[in-house]
Length: 285
Image 1: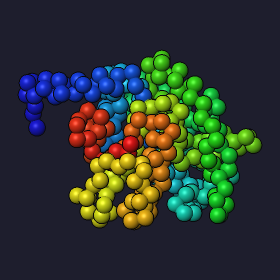
Image 2 (image 1 turned 180 degrees about the horizontal axis):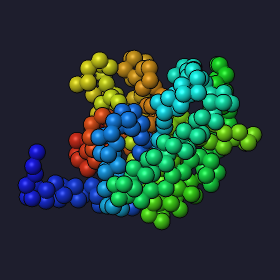
Image 3 (image 1 turned 60 degrees about the vertical axis):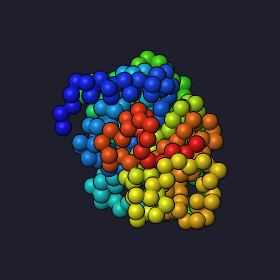
């Protein structure tokens, strides 16, 4: 579809108030799902991030890499094991997690963003003692799966101050000298809170929180965090949405202005969320 010059100008004018609102502020994006696999969507996301960077937004990208980790484990003949949705991470697996997340996935994303004329730097939770973690204690032993105890944002702030977009892989440094696998949603929420971010955006493969999980037309666009327990009791928040929404609640309660779950299957979904009145997905405040 061809857009006329007048239409282009009108779009830019309509975006101006949002650009002014976000300039100089921090937005943390958790990148995952189909948007991280589909090549066209990957290009759209990188374009969105570069545009945000160019209009003065301090963008921080936090990423996972579950499919890539599973693929590498398969190559070495090791089966992926999950307990209550979390990857069981033994000593051999944590080596693969660190190698794949902090090495291949992280640096591939840096290279991709720079191909879109952005300015990026790849980091992981071990750099600058960014993410300190301890072994997660749950009903079953998860191995080297960690829960965050501290986040040091100095290296992130230094990177953004120098004009770089930090791309962060979520492994953490244990007090016992071990490396821990950290859930990327949890890490993004905690990093957003410690940075005092205006927004946290979680990219997913669904439209947002649905009143009926089988009907994407039942999107709930706005949720006050105080409503979340009631929505859980009603069964509207269930399954895999529970941990994602808990991350949004945690971020807002720790001071993040707004948290959003958006549909990463839609091209330029980040820009639609930031630079339009309607937005997309579900916003938690």
